[in-house]
Length: 174
Image (cartoon, rainbow, N blue to C red; front, side, top):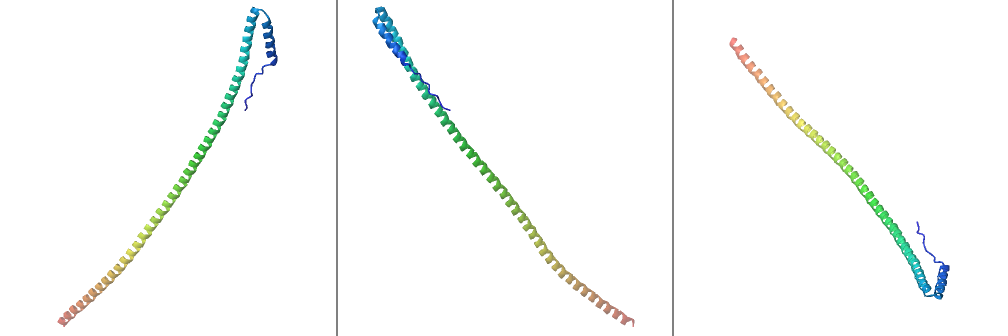
């Protein structure tokens, strides 16, 4: 968008016309001179107004250009700030996603470690139970052997005792 320069051109014919009036007014009587002075004053005022209007229009044009430049600069600043904010949000989103992925990986590792610990614990318990069962089986075997030996000795002693008692009783009978 651009600003159009507005200017007022003062026609040279008006200045020439004014000069002719001033000369005609000087040739008239004193009342004409007063009238000519008023006319000259009005013409000078109009000239000053036109000059002032040109300056005012130039000033307004400059103000407009300055305002437009400020709007362009402001919109560029806003766009730059928006791009920076977007980059920050993208960075935060990326960091958050990375944190979620790391968290999931940590939970997965924890789960694997816990499963391995449980497996190791169960394997250790089974191994200990096997060792204890083997040891108990060994002691049960030793106890069985001792019981068998004791029973054998008792049985043997009983047979011997019975045989001795039966032999004496038989000898007394005979």
